[in-house]
Image (tube, rainbow, N blue to C red):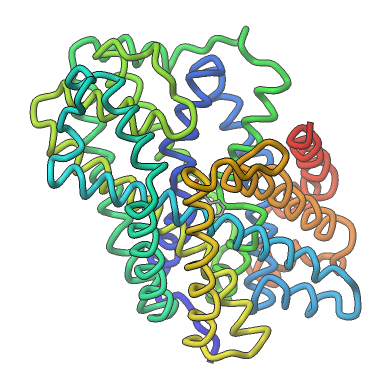
Length: 452
Ligand code: PFF
C-alpha cells in the first residue's frame, strides 16, 4: 500500500521540517545584513507570496495527484513525452545537495558535541580568549582537518538512514512531530533572551528599519533565490512529500501554513541574531557563509553568562533544522528507487545512502587535503553547491512551472486546488495565472543571474 502521513499535524511538521533549515538560520540573516535590513525582509515576503507559494502549490498538486515519485508523476500525466526529465533534474539536484548538506549537518553536530564538552571555548595558543581569531581558527582547523568532519558526516548519514528505513509514518513523521515543537521552543527561548540583552534595541532597529536605497535588481534576485531555497522548491522534495498527503488534504491551506511558518522562523532568527550580535558590538563581523553560525555566534555566547548552555541549545537547534532537511532531501531519491525502480524500501534506502559514504567524504575533504583540486576555480564542495543551487534548482523549478502553466492537461491545477471541485477557491485561478505567466519569467531571471 502507498505510504501516507498519518495526521495533518504530522504532514505539516514534516514539510516545515524540510523547509526550515540552514537557509533560515544562516543564509537569511546574512542576506538581511547585506541588503538593507527590513527592506530585504519586505522584498523577501513579497517573493514568498508571489513565487514561493504558487510553485509550492504546483509541487503539491503534482505529488498528491501522482501518488508517486518526482519522475513517475510526469510519466503518469504526460506519458510518452520527455517531461519526466524535469523530475529527474530534481532528483539529481537533491542528491548533489545531499552530498554536501550532510557534511554541513556534520559540522553542526560536531559543534554541538564540542559545546557539551566545552572544547569549543578552550583557548587556542596564540589567540586571545573569546576573540574572533580564536573561533575563526578553530573553524578553519576543524573544517580542513581530515578525520573529524568525516566521522560526523558518517554519523549524520547513519541517522538519516535509520530514520528513512523506518518509513514515512514511523520515521519521517514521528521524528518531525518530535523535533519541530522542540525547534520552535528553542527559537522562542532565544528570542526572549536576545531581546533582553543590553542594547538589543539597536539590533531590532537595524532589522526592522528598511533601507530601500540598498534594494537593487540583484537584491530582488537574491530574495527570489532565497525564497526558492528556503521553501525547498525545485528538487522534487515537495512533490515527494505531497505524494504522501491524503487525497482530502487542502493544498492551499497547507502551502500557506508551511510558508508562513518558514517565514516566521526566518523572522525569529532575525530577532535573535541582530540584537545578540549588536549587543556585543560584533555587527562589523562577517555574516557570510558559515562564519555567522560557527564564528560570530560562539563569540556572542562566550560573552554571555551561561556560555555553554546557550551554545548547546543553539547548536542543537541548528542540528535539528539541518537534520530534518537532509531527511527530506534523501526521501526524494528513496521514493524514486522504490516507486520507480520497484525496490523494497530497505534496499532503496541503502542504495541511496551508502554511496554517500563516498560522495560526502569527497566534499568534506575538498575543504582540506583535496582543496587544491579545483573545478572552474572552485573546490568540489563550492562547485557542487553552486551547480545545484544556482543551476539545477532553478532549472527544475522553471521546467515545472512551464509544464504546469502550458503543458499539463487543461484544468489540472484547478481540479487539484479545489479537490475536484469540492472546495472551490478563488485562489485557483490566480495560482494558475502565476504559474503560467509570472513564475517562468521570475525563475528564468534567477537562473540567468546565477549563471553570470
Ligand atoms: N529548505 C532548506 C533550508 O532552508 O535550509 C534547504 C533545502 C531542503 C533546500 C530541501 C531544498 C530542498 F529540497
